[in-house]
Length: 86
Image (cartoon, rainbow, N blue to C red; front, side, top):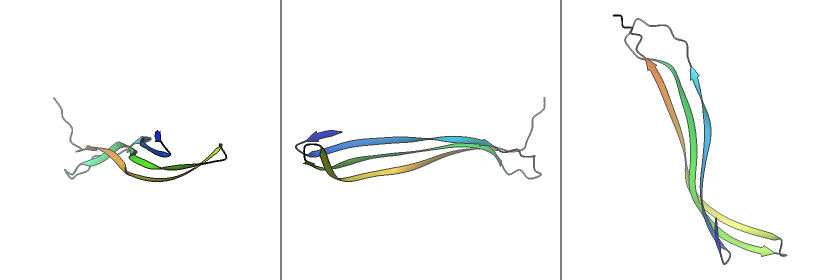
């Protein structure tokens, strides 16, 4: 965070750890891919700025404005049900 004459600004980035899963599936008669597992996580990023007013040399009141985005990322693994033999 950068503070200059009561004005301040900053950047933020926050990553949320995700998880994974696996799905037990049996080969189907169709050739359509079947989901068998995957993982996911998300993150948020942005910028913020505002103005601070100091009261009683111990308290600072800050008004702020921030802009950013939140993103979900999902990776799904598929199986075609096909097997190979040599």
